[in-house]
Length: 239
Image (cartoon, rainbow, N blue to C red; front, top):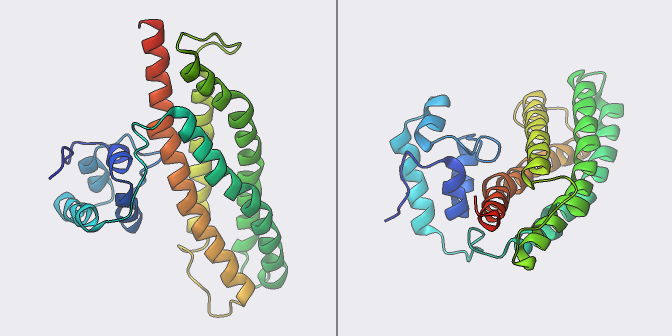
């Protein structure tokens, strides 16, 4: 059915079949920052039966009829545009909204839920890194990738190889992944407390959606855009 198997990396599974991301999320398998692991290794790390997970993946692929963009072969400029217009636009709206909601929940429930103060700190740090992170991608890295693709020749940049800013972006992705993991733990996997008001519920729903969106966002960059950009640069340089 497919040309991928248990030895294929998790990131490559999602790159080829985006609908499998839902399966990995259901098993809490990291396909963005941890996308370099083979499916088999990722399953063993989570103490999961690889064959069972593979069966779920095949069902998702066979049963999925949603049209999906082939980002492995789409122009890099198109993928950059998509990331900006979809994931960056989402974050620019959602990060301020969640900041306000978390503040209200801490004020109302902080005394009975002391973990909320830590949650607020972790989220604030996450936002403080993501906003300049997006700025650097939009003003430095993505324009360089577009220029390199459109020029048809080996481009020269003040920062040297595109691998240099990509390395910085990947490091910041790791930081974001760690923050999201802490948020998941602090909310007990977004479990709704018995005394939660509607604002508390909205906060948990927003944080859950943020994690899911970030997984897709980082996956498209770490596992598709960045490797393709480095490969293009090396091809243009005759490496």
